[in-house]
Image (cartoon, rainbow, N blue to C red; front, side):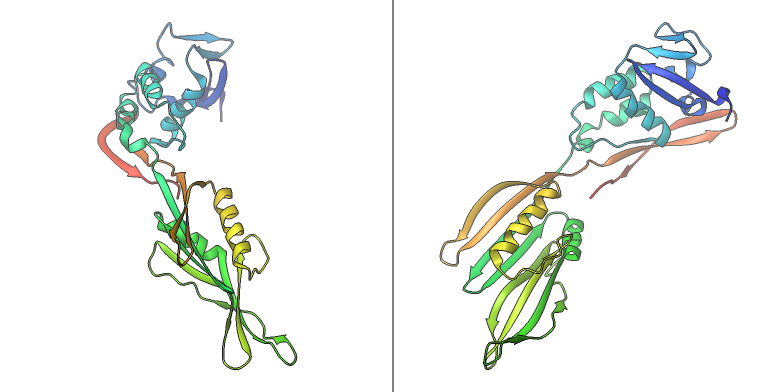
Length: 272
């Protein structure tokens, strides 16, 4: 690639290097015109264009020119400032997309865990507002079962994995502990949660590992309550912000031009 095909910019002291064709994606923008026209906002210093604007926000401007999409982090709070930057660079398609701020705001994802302890057994039910999160948990959580003989010589059969119980795409049910079967046999259920390799039979231990798994996955505990005091059903509610949807603008190519904005827009969901 020759030096004529790349250009360097220093935006607010942050250095960027990109293709000339990227800056010319929208010929009517100031970034495209600065390559061939004089503009007092763009000063050529030692072979680099200096722009006295926000360098951190320019990273999103450049990403839009490269991908034709706006995809912002879940905790991004400067949509209005970014829109003003788009207007400064005269990138009207980007300014219009950012004007749809309600589509760029992150949405909370809810995860609810119900825990019921009865004698030597513990029952769990996970409900998630995002089915893909529950699907991933179903792949992480494995229940193993085995038969135990309590007398006269204690022994145990090999552990056998059980299929997941999924009442719906948003639910996952499982249990652990022991229950009495025929004669002197006990049915034991163990729970393993990846990446942890332990097989736990105690319900309280499984509960602790579940909560730790949710917290490491970006959820935060928002409430704990007792659903039924008689049956001792406890409910733990978790929440995290989902990455907002990405907005895309369509660009048509024409001979002698690097692209012209179309009115059509599409939504591209990114993340969970």
